[in-house]
Length: 480
Picture 1: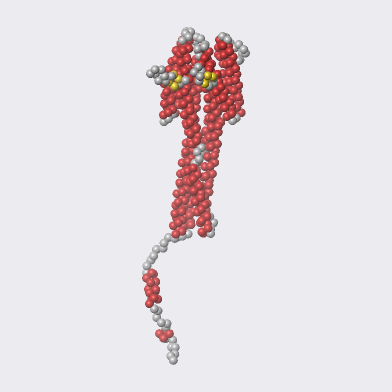
Picture 2 (picture 1 turned 180 degrees about the vertical axis):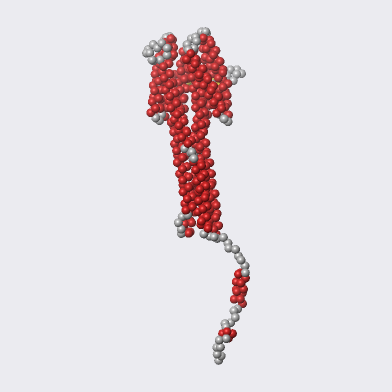
């Protein structure tokens, strides 16, 4: 039996086998190499998320600025371009129509024209020339408008020359003057048909009507632009808001921590941007709607009524001047069927319809009161017109002329076709001025509704991007 002696050699365990030695040598080898640590997957994901959200914030800002600029351009077009050109076209129509009616009225005065009427005729022509120049300068690149304005400018001297010839013959009592007066009015109202190799000429007022229709369409397009839904900004905002919410919820669940203050700040900046944009757009839409409903829509109908009243006045005067040779003008006034069997619409009937339409469009007491007065004037004028036509049919020509001119009134001192017509013109002008003032006020308010929004959206977008970078930057710092 062998006794323990405490000698290590006698009590040591068997030497380790080869595998143990191999493992040991591997550990030593690993300690001899320095392997760089790999970035955690979460670290890389947060870096990408931060970059995407920051870029998204800036893109949202760009989308908001672009959408706002489009609406601002539309509102500015309504206020300073299309609205102005439409007003000029309507005023041009009125000036030329009034000149035609005044020329016919002057002709009823045998001999020298009354100074007041001659001055009114000259003023109408000067106003028309000024409006042509202003409209041409404001047309810009609108080739259609410029072409129409050029045609009007080319035909107007011919009209003036025909009227001058008529006046010269009337001054010395030559009846041939009525022929030139009728030719001038035909050129103004309906145009000259083709004769042989001479092409047809459209009526000057027909050209102005085309110009008015074109500018009305441009105004409607500008109003649509000013009120279009900013889908680009809305889409970018919705995507950005959804991304911020998803990221915050995911990070909160993953880390079991409260939401990031940086991401909350970015969300708040986004919400403020969207609310500001929605409020500004709603305010602008309201003003554009009011500008159209209380302004341009009423002006359009009232301007048509005023033009129809002037056409009816021209028909009334030319019928008297013609003394049986211009009965077609009375047919234009009353409506009916001409010699060819064609239906002729009543100018007086269309005038009354326009006034009734304007009455339905009126939105305030001032407008309704003026249109009610205009309707009363139209009814009284029509009554006087019927009376003067009765006088003319009974060969009481001078009584008919007296009523038409408002001179030597025979029934009552203040009743005549002339007095009622002038009262109608006054109330129509006041109603148009009232509607135009409303349009101008509302159009300016629509343009002002977006003031500061573009700058605000840009600043908030930068703040949003900065908040994202700072907020997620703190989380990234935890991995280093």
